[in-house]
Every structure is written in structure tokens, then in C-alpha cells.
Amino acid sequence: MAKARRIGLGPVCARMLHPSSSYVFLRDRLGYKSRTRDSQRHLNETMAWLARAQDRAHGTAGVSAGYSLVYGWLPPYPETTGYIIPTFFEYAGLTGDEELVGRGIRMADWEIEVQLPTGAVQAGLYDKTSRAGQPAVFNTGQVILGWCRAFDETKDTRYLEAAVRGANWLVSVQKSDGAWWHQSQETETDVHAYDVRTAWSLLELHKFVPEAKYHLAARANVSWTLSQQQENGWFCNNAFFTSKQKWNMPLTHTIAYVLEGLLGAWEHLKDSRCLEAVMKTGERLLRIYELRKRLPGEFDSNWKSTATYECLPGSAQLAGVWLRIYNISGDTRYLSAALKLNDSVKSTQFLHSLRPGIRGGVKGSHPIYGKYSPLTFVNWGAMFLADSLMLEHKVMSDFEQAVRKGERIGPNLRHDDQAGQSYGKIGSGVPPRSAC
Image (cartoon, rainbow, N blue to C red; front, side, top):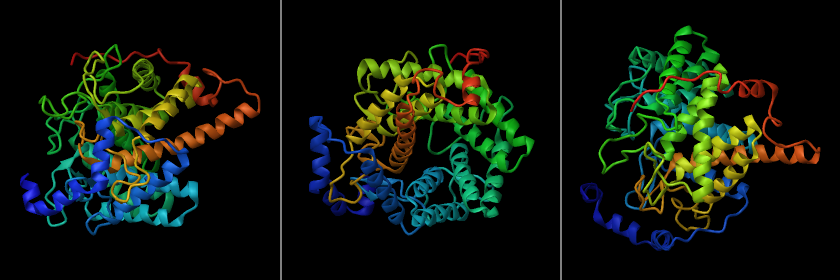
């Protein structure tokens, strides 16, 4: 309410009472979902929303963190702008739209402008009146991913130099156990399994700058992350907070972060332990989804959940993870579940809203008043859905081509030799387990 007073109660009330906002509330309260269109239509609308989020980023080239039904368009978010960069390059490659390439380049340039003197990336939203943001490990890794893709696309060494500065800071603050124990203004917890997505960023950089310290730091963090996985596939140290009033259990969002990071690490290292861990957790979530027909937003250490909301960014991420598992294993259960989960997220979108901040956006929670990022359409949710839909397009094109050729479809039958050889080694290495 204090924030509402600062910006004025009039605009807040006008937004909350606008028919478009009321329609979102009413549909979610009644449990209605929209009829889904083809995935290309949803992808186009999602990317159009992301472009609007960049245009409304308070006069910067970053991407607004999202559209709040209370506060309107939020300030830009350095962390998520970083990993949105590859999404724009990917979509530009799919559509041939050079304007999208320009958007990705402007995002990468803006990230250099706001990079902290230490090389780190700040936590939280960007306030252009102050650059005193606290450095954040995870955020730095996500922007490194964006800079690496920008360099790969443009060959502009400025992006590589910025990525090196960020990576050097990450190496300097890593602890001897391989984890990053680092305070952040965004979380109450100081160490996170999902930082393995940052380890992945160091491996991406290592492709272009083959310095041993990046490879060693990434390997150390991967090993620490694997030690956090329990026998049932759940990861310790994977929540933002400890307070019950906050997100004190791993969200599907943070669980998917770990799986994405391990898959990224596996692509570089071909360490069978990474893929084994992903398959163990992916299989557990697949069974839950098959039984419940939905994924609650959070899980405790026994994979139990009392959550009455869905974390939509997490659902979109997990659909993408399942599509990648299908590509590796050929197990069509993962393909079927991924398509259904993508459809579920698509059904929560509003493709015909007159409100630019609502049309094509992805909510933090469904219903919108759920526990995760309530009352807000978040840019990372849109990005993860776009990524998953683009991967769906590729996977289904390959699948249909295989069917037309009369190829057999099933586990260990549809993947390249290198992936298949590594997949066949699952179980050969068992990571140590730690008590939470």
C-alpha cells in the first residue's frame, strides 16, 4: 500500500477496476481457461508481448520485469533481460525478422551499460536513478548466457569481454565446496541448487574463452548440485525463502532451473551423472503430472504439495525440459506430457485482451492471485513459454518427418549417436547424497 500511495491511488484503482483486469480476475476465480489456438499463434502473441515489455521498460533497452495489474509496467530486470536475449535471436532465426535481432543486440548493449564495476550483475529491478544494486550470482550467470549468444551472433568482442568480467567475479566468490554462498537482496537463503544454471553459463563462455578456471568452477558447482539431490529426485537448498509466508519450498520454477542447468552442463561435459539426475527428477514430475493432470506450484521434500496455484513459468520450463528429455531418450511419454503442459499454459493466456500488458502475457501464477508473483504477467514466464513452443515446433517437425519415413518411435530409437551413447550410461555414476 505504501508503494501504491507513492505512485498515487488513482492510477492503481483505475488499473485494478479496468474491465480487462476484472475479466482476468473473474475467469480465474471461476476456473475458466481459454480455448487454445495453434502453437504458432501463441508463440507470435507471446513474442509480441515481450517486444512491448522492452518498449515499456522505463526508457531503457532492457525488458520490463512484467505488467502488474496494480502498478502497470514494471522497471527493467537485468537478470531476465539477460536470458531473454537468446530467445529473440532464436525467434529471429525462425521468422527471418531482422528487427528482432536488433532488439536482442540492444538488450545486450544495455546489460553492458548497467554491469557493476566488479563485473557482476545486480540483484532486483533496475532503478536508473541509482546503480547501487547488490551483486547477484544467479543474475550474473543469466546475463553471461545472453552475452555469449550475442557474441555468437554478432562476433562483437564487447559482449565476450563483458562476459569474462562477469565470469571472473563468479570465480572469485565461489566457495571451496563448489557452491556460491552469497547474500542477495532478492532471497533470504544464501545458497541455491538452481545456481547450476550459472555453472552452465561458465561452460558456455568456456567455448569461446577456453580458460581452465571457468571449466573447473563449473564442474565444482555441478558436483555440489548433484550432492543436493535426494534419492527421490528432490533437490535441497532450492527455495528462495525459509519463512512460511514466502516461497519457502522449491517452486516448479526453481526445480526446472536445476534441470535446465544440469542439461546445459551435460551438453558440454557429457557427464552421465547430470543426465541421470535430470531423468530421475523428470520421471518423478512426469508421474505426478500423469496422476494429477496438473502441476501444483511447489513441492516439499516428499513431493507432496498443498498448493492451489500453478507456477506458470515453472510449467513452461518443465514442458521444455520434457521435450529435451524426449529428444535424448526417444521416450514418447515425455513428448505427450510436454505437449499437454504447453497447452495448459497456453490456455491461461488472453490473446484478445484490449490491455497490451495482458494480451499474450504469461502470469506468474494461475489463478493470477496465486502465491507466486501474484497479479503480474512476468517477462520470464513469457520467455520460457516462447522457448518451449519453439522447441515444440522443432520436435514435432522432426517427429512428423520420422513418421512419414516409417521410422520406429520409442525409447533409445530417436536420438543421435552421441546422445544415445551417453544416455545408455545412465546409472554408471551415482552422485553423493546430502541431508537437507
